[in-house]
Length: 310
Image (cartoon, rainbow, N blue to C red; front, top):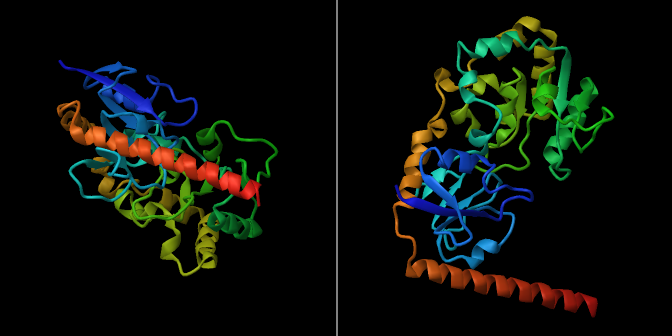
């Protein structure tokens, strides 16, 4: 079997070359060698060192960012694109520590039975710039205290370390995305299902195609925040209605989407790894990338000097 010489670059600080979801997935299907002289790189959006490589480049992000096919050969993200060199893989699919199969009935009934609720609603946010969800938190908090255990608007006296354990106590969680973009569905809704909690969601309408919309309180289906809050109050004060709500299937018709299909992802990487290691186009991409980096550095130095001399 061909050895795939691979390197991960431009991921978040502390990212480990072998202790990560992609590596663990790939070694099940391919012979992988982490190399400083790779034939393939998988890079993300936390740096620019990918510009130094002339090998096959695979871009991955779980953030609300677009792949730049001018610089990458293949891409994997949440975007709703129709391209031969692209695969949609939402962040929640690679969310470690949970198994989506546990969300399928009848197995899911065990999660429902093991998570009795004692608290109203929680909020776990570290990004202070998502004004939409902060405003909703304040409005819902007027009805009843919403426990905020994250960095933003913390009102419980400590930062939560185990998210799922914390969420499991609550009937509801405010699961607003940082921003809205077609197809951008993060792990926020997904993780609430594992604690049998009702997600209060604002974000992409594609969430209704990926999960059962009747199991989610979706902001876009209500005329106003106030109307949605009225629904939350109704469920909070009517136990039978609440129980009926959380017992609905997580997935449409109790069937997970194609995004959870490992064979689909393995086939995509098979196509990538079976291609040529090097091509003129890849050297061109490297040359362009280095040029863009030098131009960016020049602009940064120029503007810094300009404002310092102002």
